[in-house]
Length: 282
Picture (cartoon, rainbow, N blue to C red):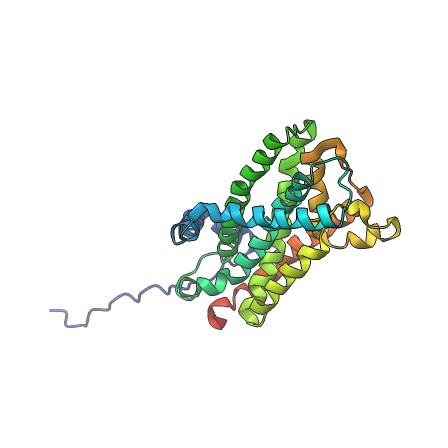
């Protein structure tokens, strides 16, 4: 008889890590698309299920902000609106701004909120802030109902430029995702950024042309003012929704668009650079 001890095969070594190449990483995003759907749907349910007034909250906040801005800038300050009803003028800017502000806030906290998931299993971490941005996009779509209601109330009919709105929505999404990725990665490394984001949102609301039009900015300052990427996004929304009643300052718009692209690309770059350390730091 053969009395030699049986040799058990060594178990294969399992390493959980991010994709080793850029190509593999982006393939992983597609492979984990069901996780993206799950996280997005979970956050949407949590957002509206655990609130007293539910989905109405997405309508009340922008509506009240629009009312305040209309009273302050339209009735008290008497700023020009180019013949457009001031509530429509304001709300056409509130749509992209609220989407950007909500996305920035949600994305910045998304990794911390999902720390248990991130520290246990591998998946492309980019899915987490992307799913948070989708929740803000749902708010954006719901808020659009107010825009439709205002147009019906004032008998305002957009022209052919409304067909270009998806383009400006894509630009707003790129701005929100780019800034959100920066804040999400920085918030993991430096927890103080959770206090900076609300300040950025509050300060940005007043330096962006939400309650007024960019036309009131003196000509010599228009290009400098467009260093705020949201200026081009908001002007684009107004041009698409309000039609010929508004105009786009093309040099400023191209500058804002370039900055949006820069923020989006560098946001992905920095997020990917820091991604391998998230599980350890969190």
